[in-house]
Length: 195
Image 1 (cartoon, rainbow, N blue to C red):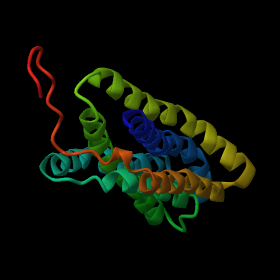
Image 2 (cartoon, rainbow, N blue to C red; image 1 turned 60 degrees about the horizontal axis):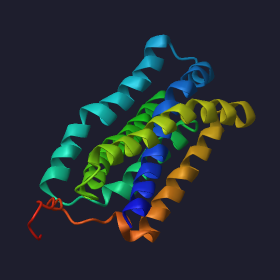
Image 3 (cartoon, rainbow, N blue to C red; image 1 turned 45 degrees about the horizontal axis):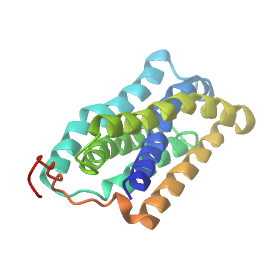
Image 4 (cartoon, rainbow, N blue to C red; image 1 turned 60 degrees about the vertical axis):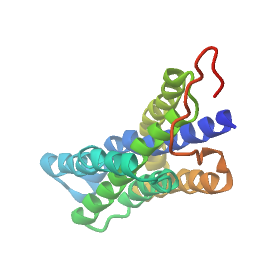
């Protein structure tokens, strides 16, 4: 049960962080298509980082105070949806909004994801967290490759393909219930005592 949950949470992290890696790879194409300045192009990353990093402690606070498990299926979906729509942005303002939406998905998934992995077991927490982190790093590495592939073959509308993994992982979260752990961390067993 724990292994299945860990695989699902790690896959969610992978899908979420694909978008983090893909966005910078899309920027040269967006810059050329909309004839943006370097400052305007860099501001797209700023909008993403403001929502993915600056707002993330707020989601961490929510995760510490209440049960917000619903962020686990919603986070990857928002991250993928934001990036998927970025190639269809009819104007610069829309692209900033889509980048912010993707960042919001990032910010919402990570705190609850790390907490849920930590609550899976009282033992081997460092190993579980490392595996969860590995999923995100792999997503970050794969993102630019996918962005380049989709643009070369489909142009800017190729960003729509990023929505597919988000939908798939969200569906898996609803189908597989093993990630829904109790909120209280399990008490470690003390030698010579029964739990």
